[in-house]
Length: 319
Image (cartoon, rainbow, N blue to C red; front, side):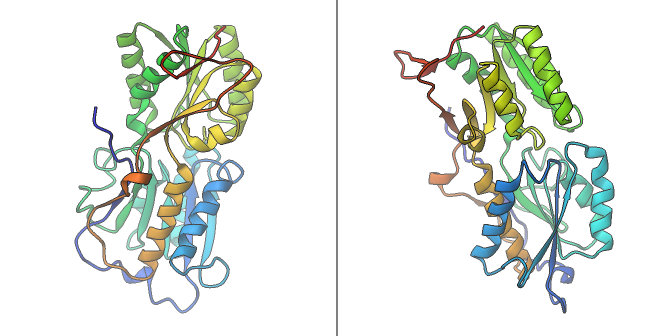
């Protein structure tokens, strides 16, 4: 299978962004809306700010950011978006699923999103080359990786007969992710048990369930709230081999990930938002350079509990 590029900066015809993003007498304000929490996304916020700085914007000097955090409660997102629209921010910078609420409510305010799903299939844009309207952004296509992640987890932990799949039931992409995981497990002759979490308390309860069913490995849904170091800590506590969506969670102590650098995607989102603030025309579809745009399998070696196979992969004991 040919390696695929995973980030696309979406653009359209060479038309200027609405005047709402430019020509304001005071410094422009970016409305940053996210389904997770400020603590969980601190590194990504800093990456977004770095992206702004690369193109001449310094927070507190010539740009301001107003943050709204749903903390896994996606029912709060529409009200958060409406509040920012009433405040007439210059740009809305949402992630999935706030991107859909932002598109509906933005009016003439430009929307620069990050999404893990296919923005065309989900209805965010008309096409990658010509998204239409005042919506553009960055996509990682994380949502389409679930089946591949199941296969890699089985390869790396071959004794895993029962894999737990931790999902957030409040995210619109969950139904598709679950379907892909179940289909992949069936083809591989394994079994998937779905466990849910949309709050910190439910994360703890989910791990209680995983222990009770004696899950031998864990796959974590590519989802904003579940980019959570609490999950990494609990998986380590229970010696549960786990697959995450971003390499940042491996750096935080997680065992393995298959995906991209979330920090790099948010940096690019910041660059794109700054270009919109400067009144740039909507560019044609652009892709990341090959050196930074590949999905990668990242594994952390555990000396005490892992042994190397003949293929060079690391194998972890299962329960």
